[in-house]
Length: 162
Image (cartoon, rainbow, N blue to C red):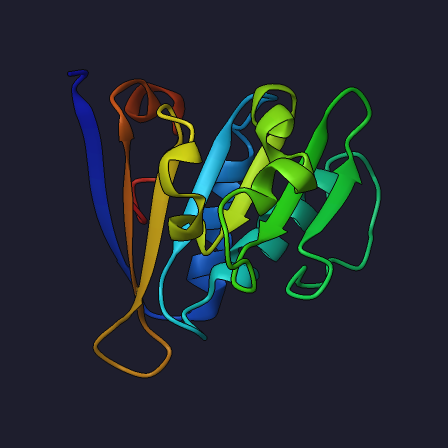
């Protein structure tokens, strides 16, 4: 079994959650998958939206980033790479993941998957797991990052957050 990376971050405001997403997004490359879990309203979509918008802004683009809760998957062209943003909340069977094309995207795109627990055994083993939980006060969040050890070397999180 490979060594695992674990980091727990306590954040006080949605802006800090967005900043963490931006920092993480800067290190992602095609083939990377970020699996997000947490209760309804925890901030999974906020996290994904901030990450996607920051990657688009780096290319000089702005684009609306809606939650894919009804479309299930939204894709964004980064010019040479794609981001796939999936929301699996409404899936009833992991086999539907094959129909969405996510299995192939895991190898070729940057994938952000909300409600990742619905992937079952289809979750990529080298994915970074991001669990977002309510914090001690209403706006606060506790974010747990877990994945293979190489994620620790790749992430460039500022000391103020990490």
